[in-house]
Length: 178
Image (cartoon, rainbow, N blue to C red; front, side):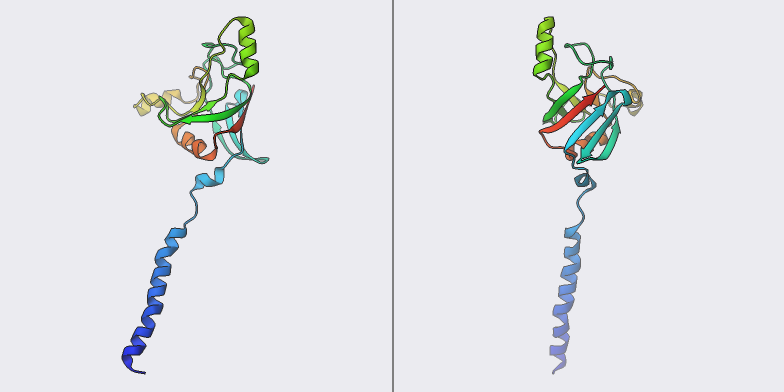
């Protein structure tokens, strides 16, 4: 064999190794959020906890802020209570006044019936959301931590809302317990 042929026979092997090395980066692991996929959500108001649950396993927990009047079930619009019961996370708003928001299907049929019997509006637009977009100061945002401040929604930190946003699909059930 001539030296020219020997040299070029090794070249395809080197090219193959180079291509394999470059393509190895394309098969990277999925982002961590993919492992958080949840099939249901549970909120325990008394503990201020939101849990993402897959099967029987809690895959992530978050501290939450609730309505300014957190005790008891939401009875009417403006009572600043977070509802209790079984609902569905049924749509989302990426352009919310808060850092993303996911709607909770409150009021359900029972909530509407009870409010109607009292002659009041049950309210609505109860969401899981992040912090208010209109607050820019980190110092002011820290004042929201550790206290109930919403009008009945369930609030988490923005980075937590990003995780929740990717971990659930529209139609995911949510149970809100006292």
